[in-house]
Image 1 (cartoon, rainbow, N blue to C red):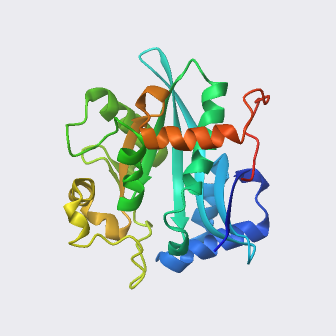
Image 2: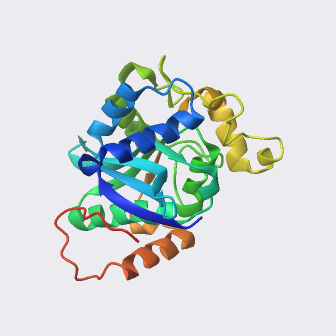
Length: 256
């Protein structure tokens, strides 16, 4: 499958793209609700899309928005990743992370003096594994307890986004209308074999309700000092396709 990844403004999505994104969600999740889907999409700033170039249809997407707070007199921002689903045929395609890196790099240039983090919620071990792959420090993690600064950020952003559905004690987002995977469509099931990975084992212990759609809240600094070598390779690849002298006054949707 030949895939194109593109970053588009959420407000510029066509009706067809919205239909294809919701159909993809409904294929794998129970209780997919169109009104809730549209409500969630309305608050997002950007959408990273995977497009099957042969069929011309959306085969994966991740919604993104920028959160801003002042904590102890410090300006703090977080890139929040919302609804994310990718057809299993596209798994392992690094271009999704390229699209996310494009958003991050633009925001870092626009807000170079502000602390910036990634606030990630996930019910998939595959998404959680992005954290140790691309970042040196992230929380929660199996190797060490979550420090106060990270707990506070998770609490601030979790309460802002999900209110009473956010459990500050566990760092889990739950909800009566939350979407669990359809029977027979567990696209990221944690098998006994996968539990040999300590990150996956930890994720399953921290979020045992993942199969029902419970989301684990995570935080990581996205500043350059926190990048792993894998992240540097992704950033270099994205930067090479976007000239350093390109004027950046907004997030410009770009296909690559």
